[in-house]
Structure formats: C-alpha cells, structure tokens
Length: 116
Image (cartoon, rainbow, N blue to C red; front, side, top):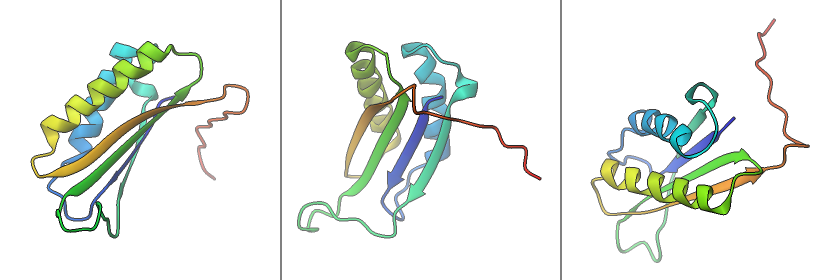
C-alpha cells in the first residue's frame, strides 16, 4: 500500500532509485506492511527555488502515503527514519522534508491492472 512520492531538484547528484529501495525496506520495520506493497514515483522537477534563490540549495521532498490507522508515534518514527536516510544519500546543500500522510481506507482503491 505505501505510496512514496519523491520530488527533487533537477540535476541533483542523488540516486533516487537506491534511496527508494532502502525506503521500501525500512517502511515494514515501522508499520505493518510488506516491502512488496510499496510503490514509488520519482519526479525530477523542471525547476526549483529555496528562499530567494541565492543559497543554491537543492530541494528533495518525500511524501509517504499510508492507509489510516497507524499511530502518531509510528508515523513520526517513519518520518524521522526516512529523513535520516535522506541525510545519508544527499551530499550537497539541500532543503528537504518528509511527510507521512494517511489515506482513508473507505475511499482508497488500488488495482493491479493487467492491461488489454
């Protein structure tokens, strides 16, 4: 179930695939889910801006969407651990954040579509 969205500055020296694989391994350590259920989209931005642009910092934004019902403590631990993982992957000055958000179970639908 977990959906991981990684938005990052263009041209940043960041192996988002390696990072995502590590996130997929980390999530089941914190919440009740399986690595096989994790899905990630990496979206390099066309442009970015931090403050007035003078710092030259890169930006990495990670959102992890999980089904509702996990404790605040578990969601907080997941945020902290993914932030620590980002620190180990980003080697340039950067502004980054991690947000864990919940999806309502009653309105969430996921389908493996086999195509036509």
